[in-house]
Image (cartoon, rainbow, N blue to C red; front, side, top):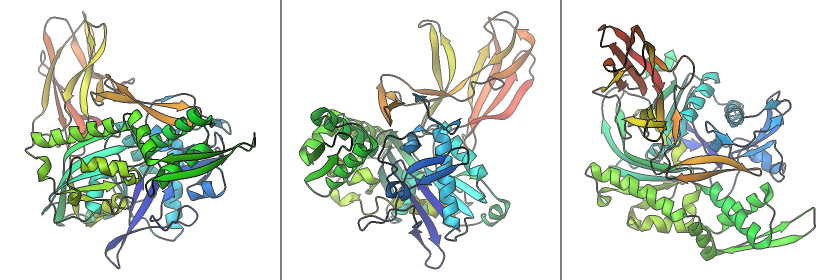
Length: 529
């Protein structure tokens, strides 16, 4: 059975393909899913560690039902998706004699969800994960490692905005803009949908069983081609933190998991009404506070934190990428809003600044991603490009520090038809080898710092800096050429050819210009995103 998991910062959605109805449906997992009249079954992305040594955890709605999210307890984790694969500023908790990382928390969370699906009981043969478009390679590598531990024949991943475009089922529309705004990330993706015939690539493959591989060839495919992308680490959890800060400053309210939950409730109420009220009771001082907020003040708080400026920046990036391909705003046939944060009226008003309201769709904010990801198991081909730029590290003599020289720019389609060529020489006398460090370059407008503020995991946008994650900066991975005889400064010594294959592996060929020998031939170095 095909299952799709939209693992979100605030909520997680599980969908399966119903063979009888030939339609996707959202799964309800007993005890884990939150059931409400307004929304489909959602699993709160919360986890509480009862015993770290034995991997005994409580997750989803069970955490809230047992009140485990109301106190500042190091065993309670929320927003942990944001910390996966990201350097964390601050101390990670030590529970039951071991340091608990966000990668471990995420693995516990996903393993329990897969186990709960099987307890329904439902078989899990094919699994698709959706990932933020702006996720660094470390997150995708982590997801790949988790996939290898799952007893599932086939595991794939697809970026969330493309999945959402498929989930809305707008096969009659050609160019779609997806605005995916959840608890932790803002992702914009411009995609083109059309029909084609041919072999059936199934997204980006993390794990592939022989049985399903044999069954996958020779089917017709519907194509979702990604034309432009933009994203930021900005979401509903940031808004919750801003509201907690506001009440802390205006009413002296203590910052805690309970006040964060009350702030989230106020935010949700303001999506439905103009004024919201919650009551906070401090069980230590026996003081009570009435928290009131109206939409006007709420929108002022958003503006004070450059919320709308950040939205404009992402939108302008996508529209500029589109114009370079000859696509104007009027050419976009529909705008699809997904994620809980798109339900904020101010966000919908912001979208209407750019597009006619008749083009904007918001009827499937929670289910579109998971249900769209299921389309991969039904014959959808996804053609994509590299979202990040990649470069090599060099010593900048003028600034006396390391800098990065762009090698492959964002927007590069893969597989590459022509390699990128680089010629290098020795830098010292009798140099025995040449090392090269490849890095994934973040947005040129700034990076994101993830850190602890008390017990809150928050992100901070860094302006004027380029964030970089080195991909092979470790022993045994930096050296690309052993020089025999040794190299000397003053002349070119090796030629390096880089290309990206259809599985996004950066491959390298190294030729020794002195001896005319091939030192490396089409060797995979790292996987790109």
